[in-house]
Image 1 (spheres, rainbow, N blue to C red):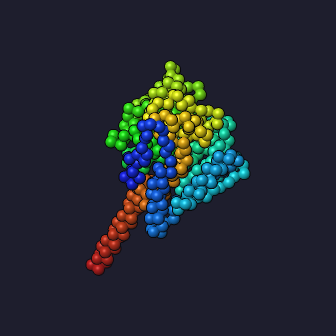
Image 2 (image 1 turned 180 degrees about the horizontal axis):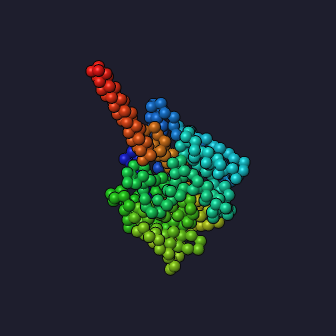
Image 3 (image 1 turned 90 degrees about the horizontal axis):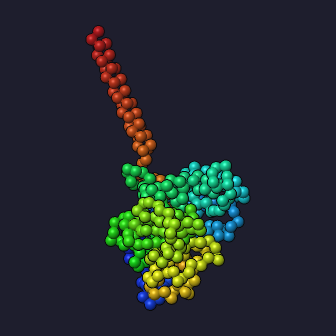
Length: 377
């Protein structure tokens, strides 16, 4: 489910050529840089117009090294590309909700990112987990991660706009999952740009290993929305996304799914997991989205025609910036399209102005009539 626009960088041509004798690695920065250049150009245009660049606010309330590192990367990338970034560090996780609501309501803030985990899977009064509740508390007008309830439900229903039937404001997609899509678009033999939206992966079989709410589940839905048959593999279950429907697969195994697939995405968050390379077929594209290497690189690159993407972080940050700019353009820009409430307000103002003019005209006519009658007498 890629929301490509005419102003987006051209990813219709592969940035790497597969080698029929061995595997090759794709440097994610080759895909990230055109998107970041696009952001820089937009920021420069805003400055020329006297506008401040969009502001992204990060909320950090944990000591998780990965979260801290991601926060540092985000700030560094934003500043390098001219975007404004503000990290708000909280001592107590319980304070995140209030800080999040404040950021939602702050007109200076155009995007919000919460660095999870905050509470992890700890149960809460608000639902199955407090982190899930916080995710849904982020306003869809500020959700750069594309993980709030509005965007998630639209993704799983393959709804691509938030302002139906006008269809001017696109739904945002989760950053990491979107980065995988952009990387696959840049790989040979994955996306077919000659086909219409929703069918560019038609005829492809994909396996996504790990069904996390952040990456695995939304990515499987996005690839299925683009026409692929997608096996979603988790510890205790396998599902097939096909044609907008979800099918449980009781007779499939991780091995059988991978052997059928020309695209394999691994996102297992443990250093002990290794995807057996003997399952990988020739000419397969393999993407590692986990912070650990889920596959033995040396063995994988011996397989003819394989394209291996070991890291997606640089493209993820580029997609984060892209989402921030889209939020600004759709909901915060002084020139963003008026919503229904604004149109109604304008109509009321016009009616009020017309009413005042009519009253003034009536009063003038009445005064003139009275004056003429007085003259006659």
